[in-house]
Length: 433
Image (cartoon, rainbow, N blue to C red):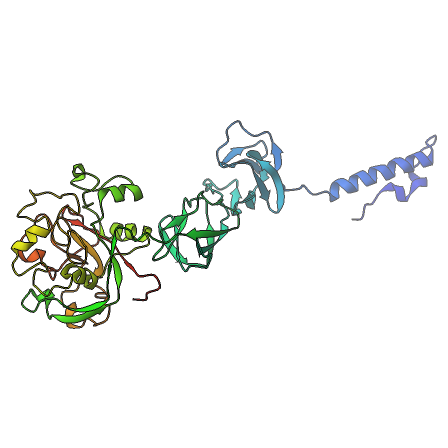
């Protein structure tokens, strides 16, 4: 900047009696001050003022300066940092406010352990300010499973709040919303971490698994049998040979007492029957989930029928005529229209109770009306899709053909009824079905 000033002509403007040196000194000081004022530019950074007692998340107020406005910010979940146009204005404060010039500004809210929230605001023309909550940074969780006794790795399914996330070894994000982390593996009891993992922290969990107790289960030997009935309903035809690997099957239907140990409440219609009575009014997914918690699974249709027949080739499994069913199960003929404690009737030759009557039982398979026409011979798993999930065994409310081992029906997976319960099965350790 060029400043035209009498300093350039001192002799002409000097007055008598005024020392030339003093005049020059004053002129130099004045020029420097004037140059500094002209060169200085106002810093647009937020100038902090005392915050209001309880400011909203974002608020806009008028100021005496028409070219600016006062903006207030507040963190709802603890002290944080505020940056405006790249300048850090608030450091670890719960709230702060200040004056910002007109125009478009970039605001960044940050806090340790949280994801930054960045947005742009127009001052003072904007009338709407969007509240932005800071989201906690997820930690990274690594989960491994191992046998409690041998210490060897176990391939297990990682469960986060009862949702299957993947197989071990598994690595994924961990947020504050997570309440429970566990693992499930066939033949092992479900195991959960003792305490909720810390969010925002990287962690490695090595979860130990203990083998499922086979007490209360019967070992069903491998074998072949004729599945279905040629003279039965269309869904039971054609009769065809099926061969199965050995497996374990629960001796008893899953009881209300077992349910109460693994889940809240009791969905049973006949809840007053007692803890030894079968749990009923339960959805297919619930039944599947409870079996898996114990390291078990629902039986396939083929496993169920093989177990119900128990080596018999008779239509009713227990003899030539249907009257024998009343001797081995609670049916519409003798139940009094209600369920009864499990195991009160004699077991079949495989050591299994209530395979006919009391409650009919969910199986793992999709129900396919025509599935038998193309069912494989070895360890069939049911149709790929179907009209529902297959239910077997008849109940306390049924008579006749509904109780025979080959009888089939299918219900939607979310179906609930006081006539439907379940029992679990399990592969032999090391077996591959």
